[in-house]
Image (cartoon, rainbow, N blue to C red; front, side, top):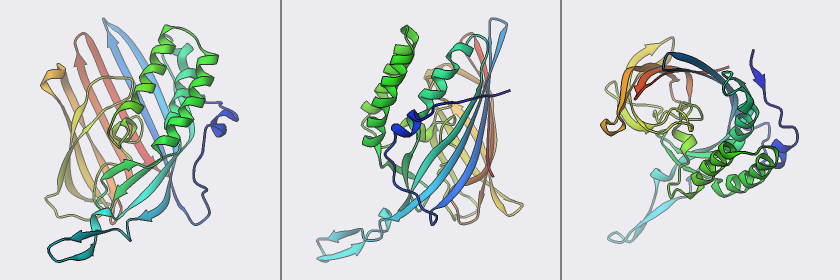
Length: 285
C-alpha cells in the first residue's frame, strides 16, 4: 500500500504559475520507481509514484532573429523556436523501508520543490532552460520554512541545505530536468523526426538523493505499434568507482512528438559495499 501525500493548502500557497485554460494541451503520466538496496546482507526496498500533468503552455521563438553584419540583414533565428511545458505534480505516493518510514512525510513534501516547473525545449526536443527559476526559488523559501518548522534534526537540516544549493548552480537547467526520479524520462532529448541511424548521449542522474552521474546512450531501434522505439544503455564514469551489472531499457515516442509514451529502465550497480537496483517505469495515460 502506498502512502499518499497530504499538503493541504500549503501546496497551493507556494505557487505562482501561469493560468491554464482549456486550450492548453495536457499530457498525463504515471512515474513508478522502485529502489532495492543490499548492505552487508540486509535488504531494503523503497517505492515511489508520481502523478504528473505536463501542460503545453506556449510555442516560443517565432519572432526571434539575428543580424548578419556582412549582408547587413536580419534573418529568422530558427534555433530559438521551441515550446514551454509546465510540470504539475498532482500526487506523490511512497512506500518506504522501516528505516526511512518516519521520514516519508518529509520526503513527500520536499519533493514539491519541483512542482510547476516550466521547461523550455527546442524543436529538436533538447531542454534549453527552466523559465521560472526565480519563482521556484521563492516558492522553495516558503516550503522550506514550513518544513523547518515541522521537522527538526541534523538529517533534516542537511537535506534542506542540499536543496538550497541547487539554486546556486550557474546552469540554466536545474538537476530535476535530467534526473530519472524527477523529469529526466519525460524529456529524453529525442527529436520529432530523424534518420534510421539516430543516436544520442547525455549525462543523467538516477535520483537527487544519490551522488554520481551516468552517461545515457539512446539508439533508434525501429517501429513498435506505431511508435518509435529507442534502446537505453547507461554507463558510469571510471572515477565514480561504480560497477554496473545491468543498466538498460527502452523508450517509446510517437511520430512527430518529443515527449514519450512509455519508458522502462532497470539499473543494477554496486558502489563499494552497497548493491543497488533501480526500476523506472513511465507511462502516459
